[in-house]
Amino acid sequence: MSYTHSITVPMSYEHAVEATRAALAEQGFGILTEIDVKATFTKKLGAESGEAVGDYIILGACNPTLASRALAAEPELGALLPCNVVVRRGADAQTSVVDAIDPQTMVQLSGAPAVREVAEDAERRLQAALAALGETPAR
Image 1 (cartoon, helix red, strand yellow):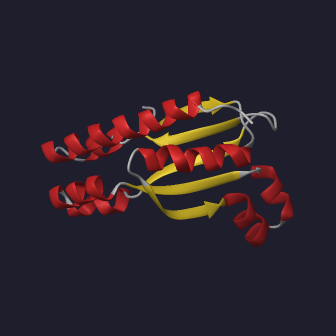
Image 2 (cartoon, rainbow, N blue to C red):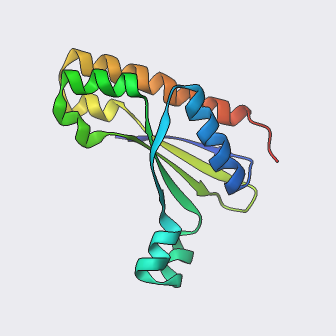
């Protein structure tokens, strides 16, 4: 089972992070958490480990309306929130990869109809954000 939706975009890492934030915001997602994996690995494991992972950020995206509906249906789903979106440098400095969690993984863990509805809505929004990234001009 695939658990992410991914897109490779023709833009620098820095531009991809900025464009991803904007695309998520357009779909009603705010960023609750942010983990700079390269900086964390460098600090905790040394420069070699940070360089090995390269530019890599995890954005904890949350749409409050969807999260509220999900938690009302099944409070334990908080363990799966927020929706993580990864931005990482691609094969070269001119491309980046954006991976977003597939909200359907929630449906695999819960049989509640309300959870299915929230997951479908979240998936539409995350897919729309990824599609918008594909249309963002490179710079």
